[in-house]
Image 1 (cartoon, rainbow, N blue to C red):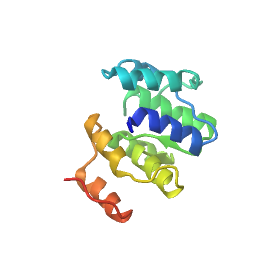
Image 2 (spheres, helix red, strand yellow):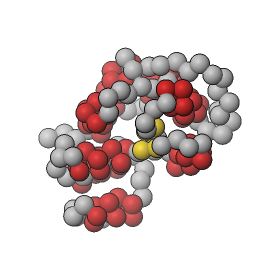
Image 3 (cartoon, one colour):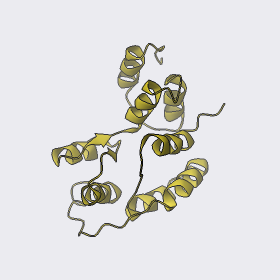
Image 4 (cartoon, rainbow, N blue to C red):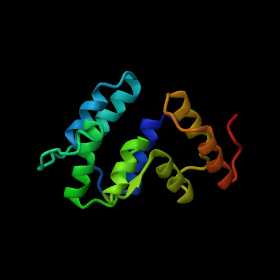
Length: 151
């Protein structure tokens, strides 16, 4: 079974959350990704979920344009969570009282709710697809959930 992260993450987002939206800047960034499989699946999933921000983006000097628009959209929609993995952008978002969750958090919730059986194959695919998480963090999550660690 292929555990391609963009495919499983989009399925999990639909399963775990009532509504999923992205700002246009995030969709534009997805279109620039140099991974044809990821790009196609991500664009297909997120294209119908684009919402425009109504404010001026005054955060773009602090973080990437897509992430800054995502923070603004989160605030405008009074959203429950903001999916964000970039450490620097997440720190800024959290300082603005944004409730952040990352890809790993979504996978953990999915395992806890029984939607996936093991985290290990998904973590391996994240690494294979050049998603950068420290092995220490991944192994701590594995240990907490009774799974074998990555070497």
